[in-house]
Length: 350
Image (cartoon, rainbow, N blue to C red; front, side, top):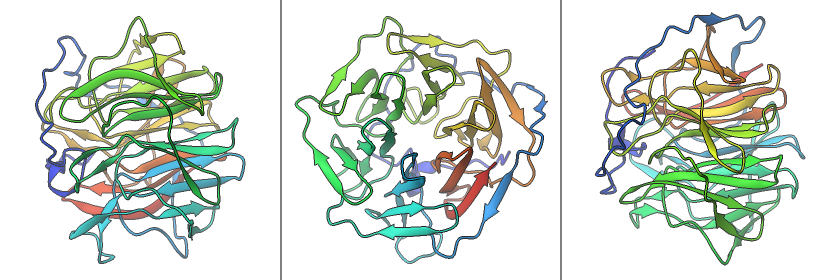
C-alpha cells in the first residue's frame, strides 16, 4: 500500500471542491475500521498483467467503465484528465467513448454524446443490450448531474424518464441481472445521500428498503452474479475525512450488513467488479482520508468473506480508476495516482 497522504480534491478527484464537504457522519457507521489481517488468499495462477495496447484513451481519472457481454467489449466514457496528453493538469472533462476488444482500445465516433463528466454511473443492461449511464460531476457548472443516457454500441440516446433521482455525484451503481433493474445508491451534491433507486428502462423509482447503509458517496458497488445481489463497500460517510469499511448486500427488498471475519481497511473511491473465474468480487485501490493514503491492494469477496490477494506485479496505488469484468477476468484502466498523477495504463486480472 502506498501510504503517502494526498488531498484528492486538488485535481478532480472525489473531493474536488463543490461546497459539499459538510454534513454529519451517522453514528455507528463502521467508519473507524483499520487494517485487518485477513491473511493472503491462495489465488493460484491468478494475477495482474500490464497490457500495452497500440492505442488507448488519454490518462484520466473517474471514467465510467462497463463490460458489454453481448458484444464482448469493455466500454469507457468520459473522466477528468490532462488536455495536453501528459499526466498532470491543466485538465478538462472528457466526452469521448472508447471500446476495448481484448487487445486494443478504439475510439468510437458517436453521432451524439453526453456532456463530458467524471464519476458517471455506467452499467450494462444485459436484458435490453444497452449500457445505462446516470449522473456524474462537472466543474462548470459546478455540481452533480441528473441525466440518464443509453449506449447501444453505435450511439448515445438521452432518456427522459418521468421520474429521476436528484442530481448528484459519487453515485454507486450496479445492474441487478436477476431482476432486470439498474440499482443506484447514495452520492452527494451539497449533502450526502443514502437513498436507493431502481431503473427499469422506462423510469426511475425510489425503493423503500427496511434497512439501508448510512449516508455515503464514492462507494464501490457491483453485482454479485453468484449470490444474485448487489454488493456495496466503503464510501465517504459525510465529509472528506470520514470513510467506512462496511460491506452491504441488496436483494431488491432490503440492504443487509455483512459481517465478514476480515475486511479491507476503510476507504472510499475504491472500485469493485465481478471476477467470474473465481466466482467472487474484486476490490482494488481507494483512499483512506486519514494517515494511510492511497491503496494498491487487491481483495476478493466470495460469499460473505473477504480475502487479501497477494499478487505481483500489481497496478500502482490509485483512486477512481475504471474497473469492470472482462470475460472471465477483470479489466482496470487509469485513475489518479498519489501526487495527483493521472494514469492511462490498462491492466487485466485473469
